Image 1 (cartoon, rainbow, N blue to C red):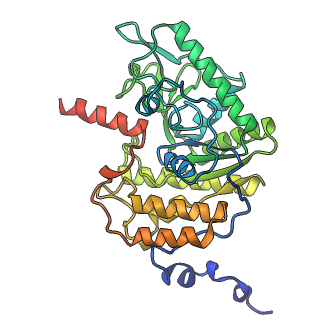
Image 2 (image 1 turned 180 degrees about the vertical axis):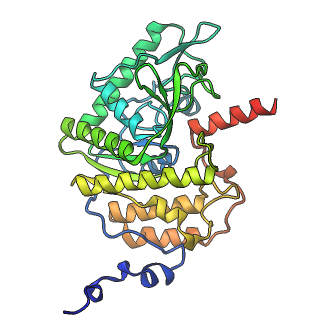
Image 3 (image 1 turned 60 degrees about the horizontal axis):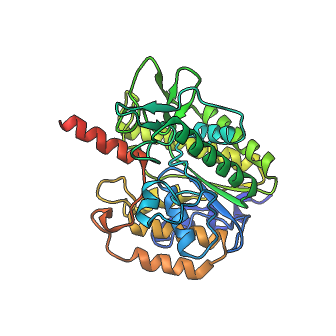
Length: 362
C-alpha cells in the first residue's frame, strides 16, 4: 500500500501551506461549509474583538441583525455610549461561555440572578451584568427592571429569528456570585459598577470541561429555539489584560486561549450547524512575527484586522480572490506604532484596567 500522506492536499503540509507564504497571503482555512449573503440575518456577540466582525459586516453591506435598536432621538455618539448597535443587542461584552449560557437562559426565563443590581451612594441603580450600558445608572428599580425586560425580549427575538450567530470566545477567567453562580463580565467594583466583597464574589478560571460544557449547553438551547440557526465560533487573539492566577500573564493567556480553541473544536466536531473561523491563527501565527500586533503586543493592528476580515468574507460569503487581494495590499502598508487612529472598540476589560491603573497610581 502507498503512504496515505501522498494523496493529501498542499494545505496539509507545513512547507507548502505556511513556509512558502508571507503573512499577507497566508490563509489557514479550507473552504467553509457555510455561506451567507446580504439577505441573511447575521448576529454577533462575544469579546472585544467581536466588534471588528460586526463593523465589517455593516461596512460591506451585509444584514447585521440588531433586535435592540437605539431610540431615534439619540446621536451616533450617544448610541455607542449606551451600548446600542455595538452588538446585536445591548448585552455588552460576553467573555466566557458561562456568560453566554446564562444570557440565553435569562432570555428564556430559565435563570434569574439573585445579585444583579447595585445601588450607589446617590441612589442610582446599576446592572452588574451590563455595567457600561447606562454609564450613570438608572433612576429607580422600576426603570432598571423595565430596561432589563426589553433587553431580554430582544435577546430572545435574536436567538429565535437570526440566521447566523457569530460568537467570539474571549476568556476563561471570570468572577461569579457565591450566592447562585451568576457570572459577571468584569469583577464587581474593579473599575466598574458595584463594590467588591470577597464574601459575595469568587474568582473562577473555567476548565476545558466547564468551558466546553457551558458552550454546548448554550448551543443546544439556541438550536432548540431556532432549528435553522447556523453558528460561527472564533477565538479572540487579544491577550488577557490581567490575570488573577498566581502565574505570569503570558502563561495565563496561553492557558485561556488553548482552552477556548479546544472548546471551539469540540463544538465543530459535535454539531453540524457549528463552524469555526480561524481569526486566532491568522493574527498569532509565528509567520507574521508579531506584525499584526501593535507595540503593546496586545492590540491588533488595522492590517491584522483587515487580513482576518478579508479571509472571513472570502470563505463564508464567497467574495474570494478580490477580498484576498485587497487583504494583501492592506498587509503591505507600514504597521502603525499604536492603534490610536483606528475606530474605537468598546471593551469592558480595557475600561476596567484603565480605572484600576488610575487607582493604583493614586
